[in-house]
Image (cartoon, rainbow, N blue to C red; front, side, top):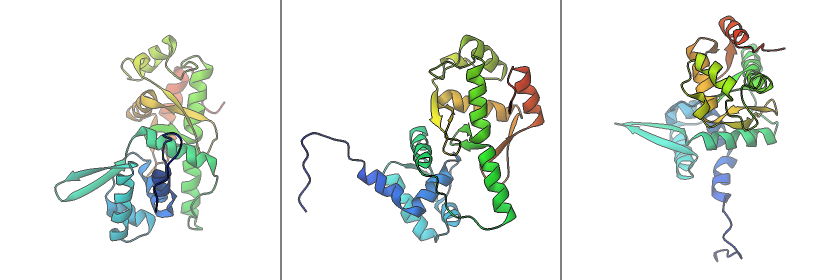
Length: 229
């Protein structure tokens, strides 16, 4: 086949797009949004495919720059390639409301409800909790139009245990379920980690769903943030 020649050097995203177009690899990418390192076998069980098949899919994701591979002796781990890939996946998910089918069980219904209420988007807080927190920070002048911490916000974020928050870059990340923005970038990561370290936000077992604790409600109120108002 003759090589296609165009009038200008346009970026060719077809191979990366093809890597994500496979449903199994799309499910694996969604699983990797929790920010952890997974083995191919774990991803295979999650996606419902054999370990050998999972390993082939993982190799494609690594080759296309969507995932990074970590070797420790005989063990092979894979992680999402970084925050830019996570943001791309979240934006793609926001374009299409379809989801993979889940079992018709009370447990699956509860898990899906919890994920909508609050979850991690790679290393940020997302879902209803993440969006409400971001909007609260903005409405009270703690982060500015560029999503970076203001002088007032930096003082409060330091009280949360974040050193020099005013120096941390930040971005807006379009939330795939809320269709609004949550806080991303290094500042979003720092806020997520800090609230978990304080015990204000805790994970729910078996998924990347998170919830605000009673301690978190009180702590945010002391900082001038009333969640759910």
